[in-house]
Length: 167
Image (cartoon, rainbow, N blue to C red; front, side):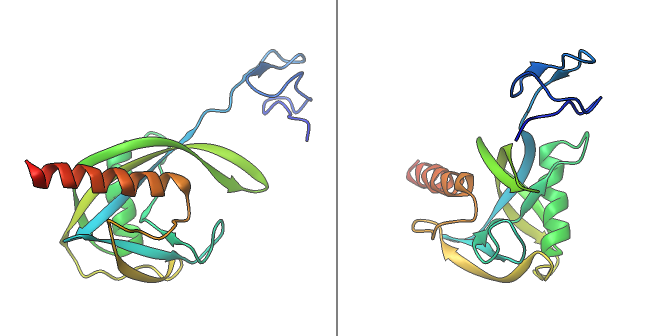
């Protein structure tokens, strides 16, 4: 598929990053930021069964895309409220990882941010438009997740928590 300029619609001379030969617009494909939480209950974490594509039916973490000027930490708290109907406290930043998200027949780069979080108010009630179910799964031996960055984040969280417990 030939990439096109988002400003004038003409074909680009190369895959971005490139400059449109017609209008001079510089085109970049930057990662879209996301935020997710790893809600813990002892040595288990909350996993949602995805109710929609991409990767419908796979285990997922609560989270989503940042709004235009929204800080990723605020996104994590907002997504918990929207997806789980609870208020959370972000306890520890786990990390940021470059990943991909398939949407409208494109593979988009994403910058996925992860926090360990605790529920501080409300009753856990996952939104059925987001999750077909939920379970508390073992952090030390998680199943494959919907997105590769979630697998990395869970391993990193397990390592971080192991280091904290041994101190």
